[in-house]
Structures are given as structure tokens and as C-alpha cells.
Amino acid sequence: MINRIFAAGAAAALLASPLAAQDNGLVAGATVLGPQGNPVGTVDKVENGTVSLNTGKHVAALPTTAFGTSEAGPTITVTKDQLNAMIDGQMAEVDAKRDAALVAGATVVTRGGVTLGVVESVEGDNVVVAREDGPFALVRENFTMQGDALAVIFTEAQIEEALAAQAAATAAPEAASEDAAE
Image (cartoon, rainbow, N blue to C red; front, side):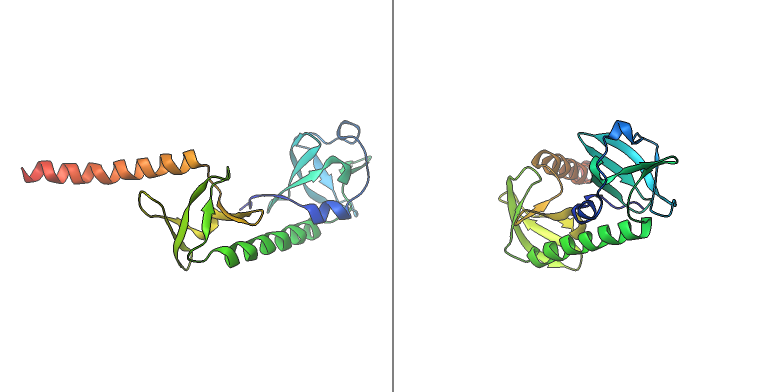
């Protein structure tokens, strides 16, 4: 399973060999090789100076300047295991910050920064968010940190759409039960 796309800042700081993307074979589908010539991952896309490198475990967003070149194709100065370990470490750090902030009473914002509500309760991975129009439930993985703010990974529109669909699905069986009782 491939984890979420992650800007591998620590990895980028360790990787230096400035060449332009078009000069070193960084195109979608290219295999990127590590220091011993072993595959590190496949380029998913190159956009705005950023390469999405798929290791099979993670998709890392790395600057084009993190890549070099060889006769065999684009290169990077770390192995697949090293890159995956760096990203695992960053993800653990982000998850720890999220978990520390995910407590009853914490304000929750949307991906767009709009205040969504307040955490009512956290039981294991289940989180209830209280809003003016009633509470709703999400799972821990639906939360992240946006700067210092606890945020859901959804926009306000996505939350509203999901709640409306849930309300409609709940109302349909109730209406059918009422019709059958008449």
C-alpha cells in the first residue's frame, strides 16, 4: 500500500546534484537509481520543479535538484530503504503532533482553513466533532496538522456533501418504515 504523498524535506536536504529535469531524464515512468545503481523508485510526474517519486511504499515530493544523472538514467544519492526510512520518520513526527492535538475541546479546521467545529470526544481511532448543526464522526487518519492547527484532510464542501449524503441515506429507510406503517 502506498502512503500519502509526503514532501520529504529532510531527504531533499541530504540529496544534492543540481541538474534540470529535462537534462537528467526526469520524466514520468523513468526509474530512478540509487548510489549503487539499484532502483529507488519510479517518477510519477514532474511538475513545477517537483518530482513525485514512487518507491512502492511512499510517493515522495522531491525537488528536481535532488537528482543527478548517469548513463543508466536519473539518480539520487540515497537507497530506496533510506528514502523510505526518512519519510517514515517524517510521517511519525507529523502523526505524533496530530495525536497530541487531537483532544476533546480542540478546534478543528478544514483543509481550506475554515473552522469546522470542536473535538467532542476521541475513543481509539474514532473522533466525534461537534458543530452547530450537530456532531459527526471521523477517524483519526482523517486529521492532520496545518501549521499549529488541527485540520481535517477535507474541504468544507466535501464535509457538507458527505453529511448531506449521510442524512439522505438515513432519511430514506425512515421514510420507507413510516410508509409501511401506514
